View 1 (cartoon, rainbow, N blue to C red):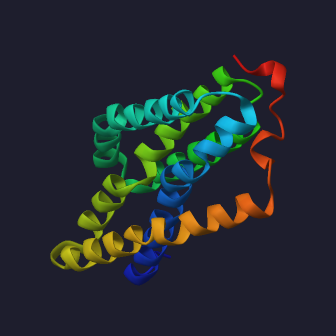
View 2 (cartoon, helix red, strand yellow; view 1 turned 90 degrees about the vertical axis):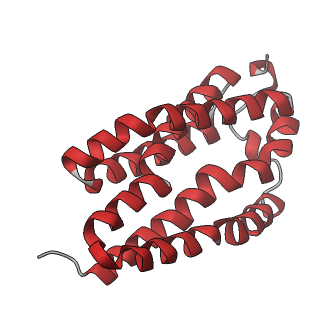
View 3 (spheres, rainbow, N blue to C red; view 1 turned 90 degrees about the horizontal axis):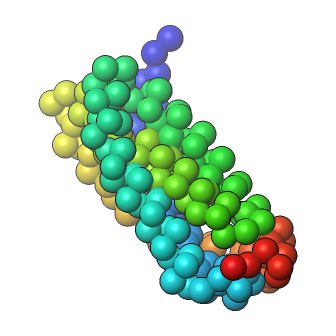
Length: 173
């Protein structure tokens, strides 16, 4: 049974707000804490994050080709799995190189979950009503920073020092 277009749009909206919130907007809130807890500089943590953004950009064209051949389900599912694995690796990174690997994998997750694959999906499925669906996804995705920045800050305040649970001082460069 094929899901209704309303269910598809709802799922894509949830995906956008969650993916943007966790893979993109949580980092600026946590970067200073990560640096403080690990001994890495803010520049080092930002470089790892930026490397993930570069990976996402580089994978945009291949992801688009795969979307055209196989549809969005495979790309977005793989992106969600990669993004989840990346966040686990980032959170549990025992040293800076593992932290960087986590962000590189997060770039794979971004390429498979952020706006481009979602827009490709609704363009394909919504036909002449695609502008409506694109607008809804854009508006909901735009709320990610409004939702996730304060939630991330509240969680960081509630669990101080939690960014260094697995990182030991001797593991810092």
